Image (tube, one colour):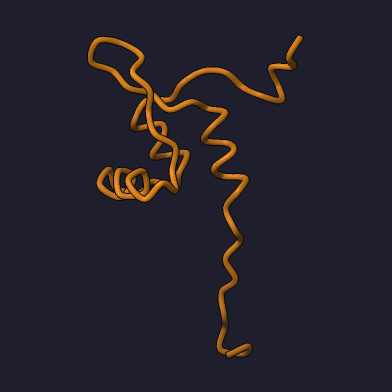
Amino acid sequence: MQDKSQSPDGFLNLEATREFAGSPGVSTLYKWMSEGTFPKPYPIGANRRGWKVSELIAWRDALQPVEYRTKETA
């Protein structure tokens, strides 16, 4: 039996997905999807699409940390 805490099932709508991803614009999300760097949504109803929570978590965990330079390190 699969441990649900390790692989959450469920879907997020567009607004919740944007919030999860750091609040990018809708066009940015769709650009990322066309580039293959962001998960694509699934049809979850007649006129609804949703993103799998487990795929969003995997996307987030795969992101490389960004190092910012400060004046002192430049």
